[in-house]
Length: 65
Image 1 (cartoon, rainbow, N blue to C red):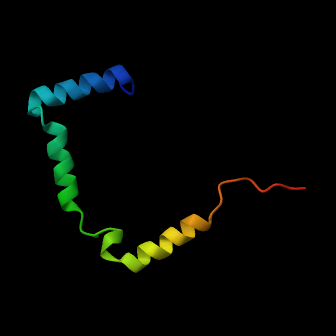
Image 2 (tube, rainbow, N blue to C red; image 1 turned 180 degrees about the horizontal axis):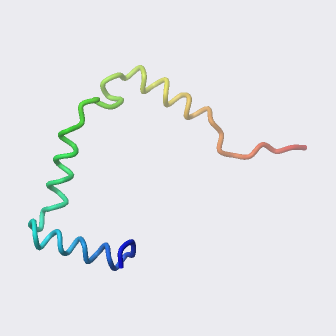
């Protein structure tokens, strides 16, 4: 049943019963604390430039006359 929705629910139930109902909250918190890059907030100018680049990319197809 691996890789199915039903299998995932069963695995989640097993993890919660073995390691506590807050299992996923705990592993998520560990991952969040391990981050050391600071993200875009650490460099606002870089974030501004990246946002401008993304804004210029059109997702619409070019209309050929």
